[in-house]
Image 1 (cartoon, rainbow, N blue to C red):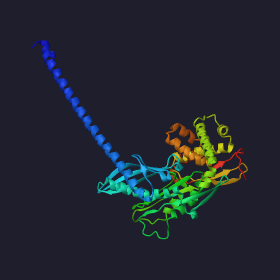
Image 2: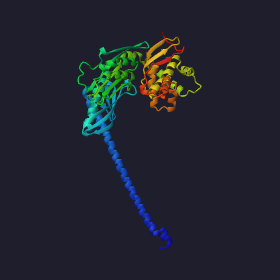
Image 3: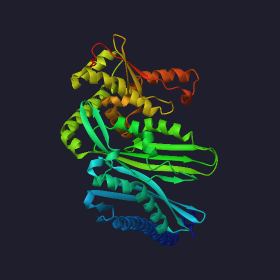
Image 4: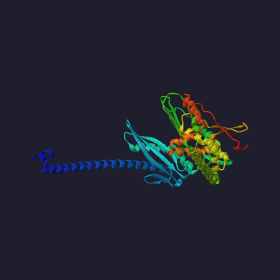
Length: 438
């Protein structure tokens, strides 16, 4: 073998090496393909298992609804109940093995055109022995039907107790509402005799009445829990959103619960349905008014996102009023939209829903935030803006238009804790251009 062959290898050696390298590459490729196929098969099996569990969930849901004298149809995505023009989507969101029990979490979505685009949303858990997924799903579906579905069906069917009717009059429009109270669910109470199924509704009725505007349905979820360590937790939702005024009432209520002892739970669903007559008579007017205020709110937010140092308060309000053609609405949007951002972004402080409107002649008009439709509609619009990932820069710009935000910033800089701040009424200084009817 010559010097060149020793240094670089002979042609024959090179050929053998290339052949060997080619074989090794082919082997590696085959191994890679086999591993990829194995991974794909495992993922397919996992997906099939996931699909089969959700199919099992829908089948169990159908089986448990059928005995309620309701025709049930459906597919691989939802259960359909034609009689009440309603569908239910149910999805397994998680599983957790705990000792000798399997816990499954299921999200339920009840959809009906009367509930709006979002529908009724509820997330519940069920438990099965050992690794019994069917038993866990079945127990969760039982809870859903007993706590949520039964009362929703009664409301959709329109069966009501006239003794629970509510009468309201807002903006000169009288409306009648039917109340449907779900079965109260309790755990850890020794004696609830005499309390009755309506006691949570009776606690919250005044707050509920204030929120009844022009929708066909309102639904309220209440969940209160007390743990062995004395920690209290509660949640109150109105149409899937935090019902803060009601939570303040619940806060006072739970202070009366006995300390210590076992875990305690109280939960209930309440549905309020506007009567067919008042809903039909006023529907077109309601739609036009609500859509107009939504458009005005969205326009006002765009004005707030683009204001500069040269813009005065009056200038911003005038710019909004050019769109609204209503100076009162323009002022209310200026007052309330920044306040809504403050309350949603900075949730630590204890806010109040009391409003004091100070007129130019020093008269004071006391009211609640939900007396103003601009606030009611504004809450939904701002929540959607935040959910759509509104830029932090624009959020900050709007926050700096809120007097509450400025006051909070000052107190926090002075070392105060947000949770310790005492709620104070929102004071609105009405200009002469704001017209108040005597």
